[in-house]
View 1: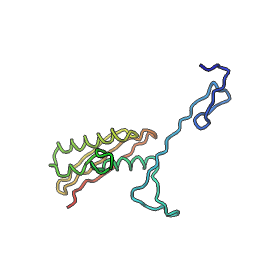
View 2: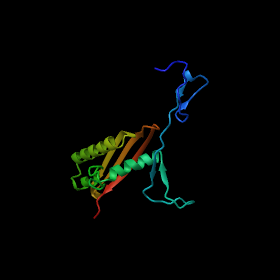
View 3: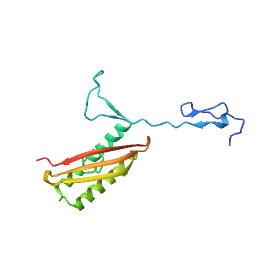
Length: 155
């Protein structure tokens, strides 16, 4: 146990100290999330690939998880929601429930940065498609975001 007269060693990056060391407080750092833009759009000034930051990076990660199928990623064969497999099922309430469960499973298991709030699924049986809207809260910045995806079969 440290003596009250001893001054603890402080890392200036993690602590903010007032005039009295005994009243030191921790200043929270917000993590900055950075990811590559998979559309590979170059920066108009540097011609480098642009980065997605913060809420756009998390939204892109959720979109990538939802659009990934099983066995697409090396060494992680069950990573993804495998949503395209549901396009060949009957367009009924059971398939919608299975879609809902697959989306909820992949987001809660593989994306700890978000809290899932709403999943909206509507089917377009004439076009053999599903319109999905997934809304969530990004925990670190307490911001609501969402992803809209249209699943269609290729002919």
